[in-house]
Length: 161
Image: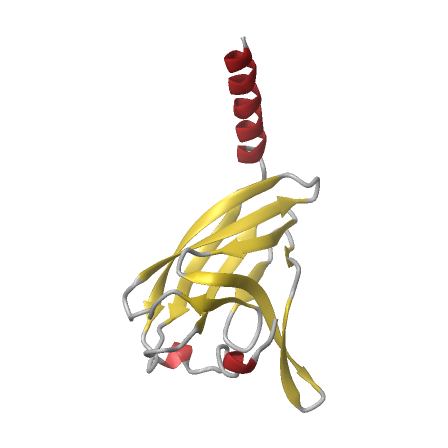
């Protein structure tokens, strides 16, 4: 009887998790390749949600610490900070890009080479608090690529948490 109750509770929990808002489209997901001994990099993508949603957590097996960061001008200085959640307004594309919002991966477990496919897990939360996960496969782009030229990972070696 205990096994049936536990199995029922687990299936209810799993279905509640699965019914959360996974209606987020991901386009052009990529990660900046690294050089030897580099301990951080950024992941970038375009996210479009069907309904108001928030990204409340990110993770990747290639990094010890993964956070959503925002880079913005503060007077004449570019500042970066971790944000607790990233709003995804219904129907509007939110771009994670160099020099703006991005996924920051720190304490890398090894180098990221051009062409590597990097798994990134986004935890999404709907307006009513239901959560779901979205698995993203981001391809590493070489450092010399024009699309990676903006300074999203610049200065992260001195960034403290």
